[in-house]
Length: 592
Ligand code: DGT
Ligand code: CA
Ligand code: CA
Image 1 (spheres, rainbow, N blue to C red):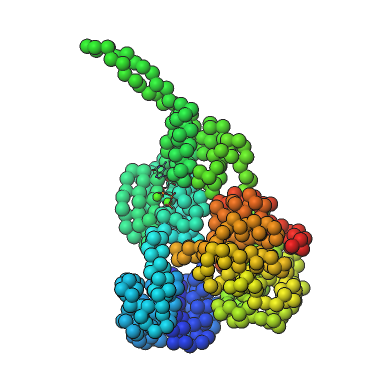
Image 2 (image 1 turned 90 degrees about the vertical axis):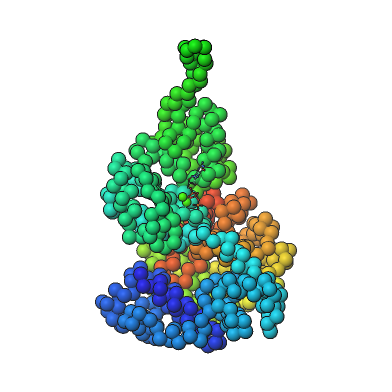
């Protein structure tokens, strides 16, 4: 789709305006980019049907952005962008992906040192040239280097949130193409892991040639690495690798089990099989009998001969059953105690999409930071079968949004009340996301926090602190009785930066003591808390809230990633407050 290409250009233009200290313009381009990325139709088609007017009607796209889109559709380029690129030939987008590198830094290193690429930036930092520039110190230089290293270390792995839609598309195309219904995503995608190495598909078919041919000729395929009778490996145009393996019906379960992984889970199962005189591979579970055969020849030789009888293979469930185990959900298959829990019939009953009644931490255009009005968000939530929506627009002094303070927040609460009067069988809760300052305080007065239904608070600046200081900062915030939920508690950005220094165990302990919820941030770049921390929080009796951190109506769909991550953390319905009814939620919030 053209949408993605235009969105990338808009992002770059936004950065270039930010370089020049031009206000407002960057925001318009960024918002238009978000809105283009979340459209599920090609803008080209929208334009063809309804012209400029239709473009203008897309939420988040104003008149001037509509004109830019028209220009690129008609002429294939944007004049303004070409002009800017001449002045600033550095690869702005490539460089600003590095944590700690913003547009202004890019401008400075280009103007002073002629740096245009990440590679040149790395070389200059290594030689100590950056710290010598005015206004930059050794700290900046260190940050640049560690940011680049982090990117390199994570190269090759993609975020679940970006790869899953494409994987589902491919699966659906294959199903449509071949009429074979039994095609499944396996590997780390089926386990819902936060980052993914490659897409794995598994199919059942008696005509594997037809399926392999269809797979290799999919429109998404760029290159075929390998192609055999029952498997193929391709490179997709989007840059991902994708595997397909075809199985016969009688081995489907064993194939699913093997290729879903994880490797550690498989290895443990295979060892258990061996200890029982069984053998497990991707085709089935077998009983092994070894007999000593006496073979007559010149000398009497004793030869050991193994015979294998298949005892299970068609479904995963029957294989687990042969081990005396309950079925283990894919999200748990990491060898983190699930095999033992299954053997003693103590597996958790994982939270499910249908248990979810409401969503937290949703941004809207009220604070000018997101696209989509609260009314539109409500409509989408209702379509999703939800009963309530807890708003979470930014407030306080943070620069990322138009400042919403004091009276603005009161207006926001009133506005939400007025909307609530117009809808039935659904409730909007007034809520905000506030900033936890360096000293653990919040930059919104208590009397205003008290008027909101739900206060989410998170760290959005000053990430570099000692472990002790950072832990105290978060704990102090949790002791504030108005704060209900801590957003993205560990602060990591997948593929971009690690967690800040933090004693997570201590945070969990204080969360329990203060009756504060911790967030499971569902946004693909965050997924924070992660699976391991979720499990630990649950073991300590802390309640968790799936927060979407969405910035457009379509982004409400990230809920699915929040659920997958919760399940990977062994969460049950009772652990996740999104499963509470509105009444139960209010009761719960009152207890703090
Ligand atoms: P990824 O792609 O790095 O995100 O992770 P996975 O888990 O999808 O790994 P992948 O694609 O290499 O392989 C898919 C599954 O196949 C994996 O989860 C378990 C199984 N598998 C692959 N190699 C081995 C192996 O050497 N031993 C065993 N037991 N299983 C394997
Ligand atoms: Ca994989
Ligand atoms: Ca693979």
